[in-house]
Amino acid sequence: MPLTSGKQAPQGSPSSPRFYLLDFARFLAALAVVFYHFVSRDADQWPRSTRGMFPDLSIISSYGYLGVQLFFIVSGFVILMSTEGRTVSSFAAARAARIFPAYWLAVIATACLRTWTAPELGDGVTVPQVLVNLTMFQVPADVSHVDDVYWTLWIELVFYIIMACLMAAKVTYRGYTIFLAVYPSLMLLVAESEDLRLIDITGAKYFSFFALGMCLYLIHKHGSKFELWLLFAFNAAIGIHNTLYFSVPNEPTDGRFVTDVGVAIVVVAIIALMTVLTLTPFKHRGYTWMTKAGALTYPLYLTHHYWGLWLIGRLEPTMGRWLTLAIAVAASLIVAYMLERWVERPVRPRMRRLLQRVLS
Image 1 (cartoon, rainbow, N blue to C red):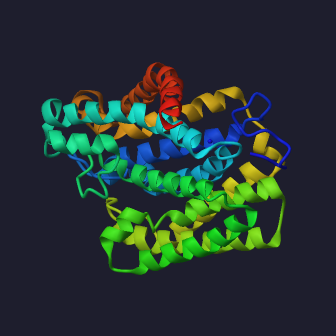
Image 2 (image 1 turned 90 degrees about the vertical axis):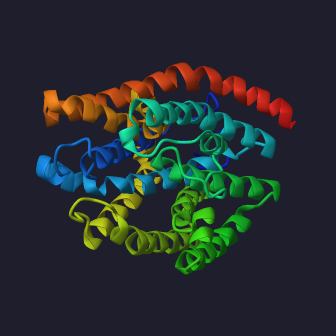
């Protein structure tokens, strides 16, 4: 989703070692988001509040939304790594082939669910809304998401665009260190402003987490240097500040289970975990099944929300809370596997080759 020196091949080549535990951490973060949506946010599909139905689990999973921060750190690390030895066109083709096939199917399937099968999940969607969502540009177009969880995808896409620009500018190591000091500072100013549209379009509240991943990759590749650790600490401080300032007061968890201290501890733990999984001897430990689990992360994130809630509403009256929850999670994993196995895996290489020909 690394290089201890410039001599190793980029990940994805036959000689490149996998980051098994990093893959598995992504998968666990996706599961945390799933449990957050299923048992920490009140939904009409449950007969009463999630706190009343899952008193202990709901409190723990209230912090599951912070899995998104882990996703962004991983992306910062992996995407910078993936630029090694690539042209801008090959990078763009690879990223588009990675994010769009499963996303297109998820958008269409969720739109059908909300319009015809389960209109109780919210207002139905319109054809223009779906078409804009298919571009992934619904945020700058000021169009509602077909599924609320798609908000992170625009932020991810903005990061890809930034990385493509840095590649086009042929930024060197020194250029990256300057960028990792200046751009997060600008994004902090944007995040502190009252321009909500600009905040949403730039993804200002979350860029520091991508920057953290980039810092980790540069340390991994170039070794432990003072300026890199200083940038790492700087972006970690911004990330913790932004999470506490913007996220805690607004999280729609039942009873406001999350606390400032709890959120700070979880975010620090995530940053520490990512450091261990990328910079210590643990980075290449693990098993091949962890990579397969990691491959389910994206399709699981795309499809679990509305489909899982719909299934909960259908099953809970007859099966009870725990069995319903288990089936909803299992079904989400099965759907994710099907998307990865029969959509992403066969379509991605074909789409990448096609886009490379077009862009070249």
